[in-house]
Image (cartoon, rainbow, N blue to C red):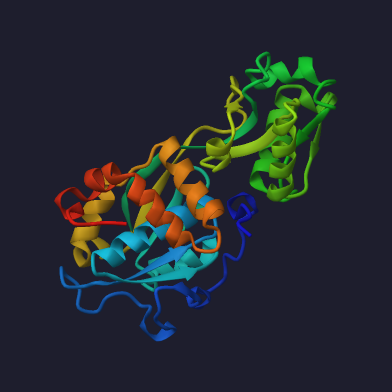
Length: 311
């Protein structure tokens, strides 16, 4: 259900913002999804765009329940990457929480950045990885894999064939570290990769998978990202919250909260587990459960505005 769409090739660049108008929460209709009309402190209607990526689902649902508790009327609009940027640049949506910079969304930022407001970085350790269970004590870096090809069955377990992670692994990391001679990258789907990982860990068998941070697997299993001395999997990226032009003026209270918004690896992983797995059919309930367990997040993010909030 929650396949990793970030890793697929960027597409639909010519799609119009009209494709944004498929509301998936918060009520409302296409006629009123054009942002605030009155502006200023009194505006309490907000439209948040959501791309179905793990961290976006988790954080969007978290902010939806926070904002509703603070009296906002929140509409969440399910959308793909290209129309999300187009819609925000055109003012058809107010906010989205999953812009990856400086690399993944560089082309979109180049095209639309001048019509958007960067509201701040909330996560700074987003990256593509080759990962093994921590019990594989002798495998600590990608070059180490060459000495363990036989016990790994000559396989790196990957995700979708068209994914960016697949391309980076196959075209950069494997030839760069000489893995292409002894290893095959087995591709199928994210779900299939996770099933293989779960099965191997249950039997404490060796396995190496393509993965990425942030991902809920890091909260479920004791995993180890392999060191990448040549940087062939790419460097760490930052995830930004982004608003349409005029966002800060129309939502000064929320813009201030966004400046304080940040999550570390453990916080994000546990939030993803609750919203994507334990409460898969009701991610808002998962977000509420996480907020109930993490009152310090509300205090540091909302400051005095966190007073009286209960989840």
